[in-house]
Image (cartoon, rainbow, N blue to C red; front, side, top):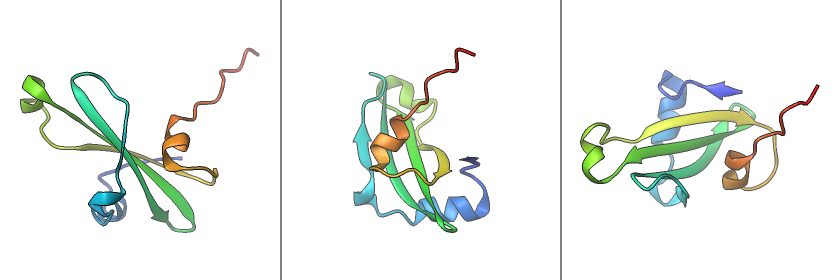
Length: 89
């Protein structure tokens, strides 16, 4: 289930994630991305944060956060990368 990262409760959980908990992941040449996790109610909250780097960083200099709640097992990076195969109906 996707969550709104700026929602009051979710935002405070994201802000409480230790800076050392963020794991760098592959992203575009003009940006960087990291993944971390925390707990939201009884479930895992996986957060991906992204930002532009280089000349484009002036457009969006701060981290943008995207999150979802899951009961999947595995490391946060694997879960962030998980995408089910599309149904061929």
